[in-house]
Amino acid sequence: MPIEPSTAAEADAPLRQFRGAHGGILHGLERLRELPALAAAADRARQDAQATLALFDDAVREHHADEEQELFVSVQRSCRGDEEDQRVRELIAVLISQHRQIESLWADLRHAVARVAAGKPSGAPMFGAEVDRLVNLYEAHARMEEDVFLPLADTILRRDANHMAALDVALHLRHLPPPRAYI
Image (tube, rainbow, N blue to C red; front, side, top):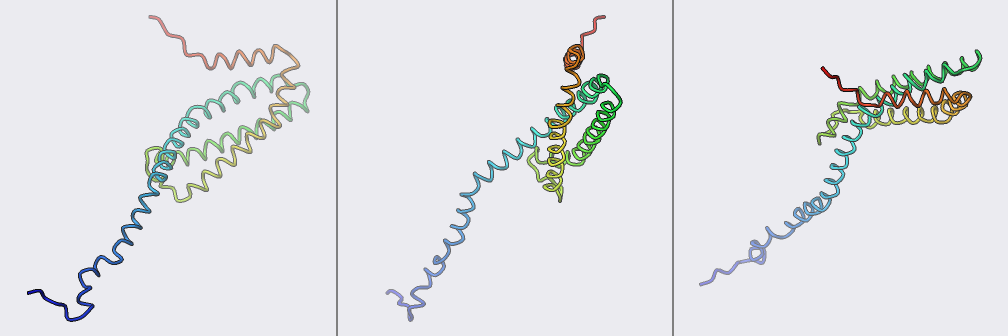
């Protein structure tokens, strides 16, 4: 003989545990829906961090060395007159100081970028602010070189085609692979 519930509430009891249970599941599914975009962002962060490591460890360091050991020296040697020489010396001093500041900021930031390149959190509480500081300094540095120093260097070096050619050869030689030694 079937058991009859004495009240409507008792009759509804087995279904109550299912009502509203989907809310949490649906919320979890919404988070799942966001996961591909988050995974793509994490992959991009890892790739961008790896590219940044290569950029600073190789290209930026080499670029600064080329400027300091070849370009700045060539321009300074080609100056005519005390006023031009003084102006070039002042600009070079500022640019070299900026190089050291950039390199120092990078040294402070490198570990955090390497962590991101490895797929880990940066571990740096001020990571965003430190990145902004480095990028802003480098942008200002690049503008100064592009807008002030390089036009002046072009004027100075073009006075004597040999000076421009000597700089070209010096830069070319810096980037040749070292010769093999024979025993």
